Amino acid sequence: MIARVWRGVTLDSKSDEYLDYVVKTGVRDCLATEGNQGVYVLRRASEGRAEFVFISLWESFDAIRKFAGPSIDRAVYYPQDKDFLLGLEPNVTHYEVVVEPQKASQS
Image 1 (cartoon, rainbow, N blue to C red):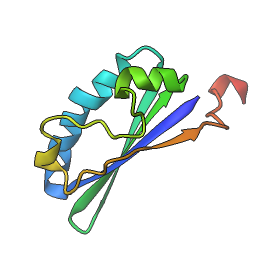
Image 2: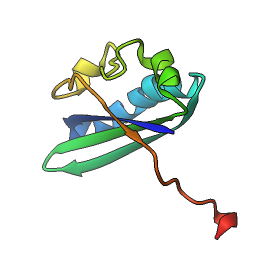
Image 3: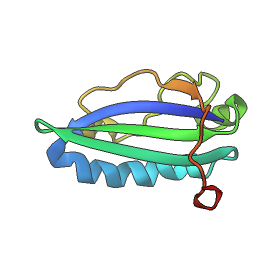
């Protein structure tokens, strides 16, 4: 499994609205893409800003291409992202998932 990790920062005052937007755009599109294995969205507020970490899980790099296009290291942005984000990071980072959460029934 491959984890695709993106980071972005908003003003804390816009973070709830941005979260709603992310769910309606990026989360929805990832989950609708064949080969997606799930999505996590993390948020941390500090000093008037909110940092988001978007982690999408994929069965393969080919599956990521179905979502991101041929340049899989490029971040995928939506039209209103520029209205929320304090900067647009051009790239994402990919990680091989080497340990996964254990299911409760396996403990």
